[in-house]
Amino acid sequence: MTRRTVLSADLKERHVNMMAFSACIGFGLFLGGGKVIYICGPGLAIVAFFLASSVMWAVIACLGEMTALFPVQGPLFEFPGRFIDEAVGYATGWISWFAWTVIISAEILAVAQLWKFRFDEQYLRDVGYPDKELGWSTEGYSPSVWVFLFLILIGLVNLLPVRQYGQLEYVFGCIKIFFISGLIVFNVILSAIQKVPHGNHFWTWNKPYGFASENLVVHPTHNADPGVVIGGDPGHFLALWTGITAGLFSFVGFETIAITAAENKDLEKHETIKLATKKLTLRITILYLLATFAGGLNVPYNDVNLVNIQINSFRAGQNSVFVLAAVRNHLRVWPSILNGFFIFSATTSGINALYNSSRLLHALASIPEAWPLWLQNWRRRLERTTSRGVPLGTVTVSWCFGLVSFLAIKPFPSVVLGRITNNAVVSELISYTVICLSYIQFYHRIKAAAEDHTLENRSAFNRDDKQYPYRTHGQLFRAYYGLLFCILLILFNNWRAFVNPFSTADFVASYIGIVAFFTLVAAYHVKSDGWNPFKWRRSASMQIQRPPPKVVVPGRRRGHLEYPNPKEPIWNEENFKALVNFIWGWLK
Image (cartoon, rainbow, N blue to C red; front, side):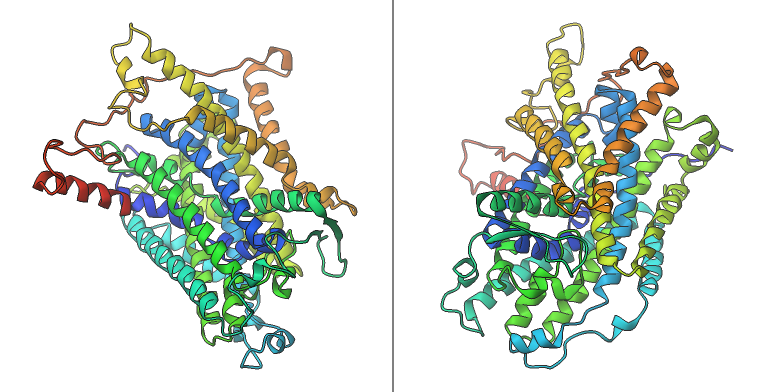
């Protein structure tokens, strides 16, 4: 009997759009936003998120163009293996998979923290809150209870057939979009009405506060030590850099668009990858910037609950700038509603993290060369899927790594969570660096193919041809920009670990991923070329014919507005229908 090893292409474009969006909206925005405001100040925090989004903008376009032309399984490591080196590709696949399993743990740890919702009574008195207490009665429960329950929930959802899973993710994404939009309006209204008058609506941007934080306080991993204070221009620059690295975790997840390529039903019919990448970039960037701006209007960057967010840790809902805005404006009920939604958001992001990690592992399982000989039997088992296309084995293995989230029972789970997210960000940054480098090689390879008159399908590689599925202006520059920025972020992502007193734990969490990556690359070369590094050979196929390049059939482009009757007015029936379809294609 032949065993099924392929995934089911049952996802539609709208599913892919919302799966990627939902992956980017976890606790990173709702808790991390306040952290970046504390580090940078309200104005500089917006700059930090904008620069972090520019890295996403560069990388997602590189990955999107390659995947649109070649919709392969496991694009995160397939393209590096094809255009850089096989060993680099395999190593990228493994660290990307590991990063996503770490993110599962991070999201579940965040959920466990969010159930500890309780404000300090002195803080409530200081801000004039009408009630003496504000919190949930769940704070006394062991964090392991929430870890267990939500791990089970995340696992069960990922056992659904992919079509039902996509429908569920679509609902999750829509809820998140409406909630974040409402949260922005909510904070703008709070700033406008100002139940607690402050003189003007930009009081958090004026003295004694300001556009940027006055000093950068480099905390160790506990509250007793006030840390090292860096002021002036060096302090502002280091605060901005720290804010970028802190905010970058919020954007991890945009590669979901490429990971879903093997299960994307609409891939050949429409410009799914192109539209999805552009929509995601616009939605995430705009919503993050507006949410950070709106939240910063109501809470000063030195609020005691923001100060308590140490640079390498995350706390509960009472440390969210959005919850604090409601509390400082004396609103009842709303703080609890917001905290409840943060739990929902972190849970759905954890669900998505398990999906991504399981699909990456399944793609790796289809490549015998990526596995040592003694694991080949296990590899073949992981390659199997159910009759509905669910890779049950890879879902189970990836889920088991989520058990790391039981670290929530440790004395300082917030610090553990901070280090876990740091490690995941560095692993993802290595993957993004390799993607940008792969694109540079890809760009020159298809350019040469487009000029090769011996190729019958050379027009498929012509980026100026109307049938080319995804082209953006200045993409080569964006690839170099993303490459350089990611390298700098990898090298200096946790410069704070070197500030006296030296933090060994923070250093290891931030830089062990680099060692692991190069160790994996070396191990693959030893396996294929022997122990002598001088005899190691680069193995890059530069293959551009398998699978055959995809082209867009004329008349099916939805990313551009093309009127069927250009000489007729816009209210012509066919022209107006084309306009409506164009707008709907970008909105849905």
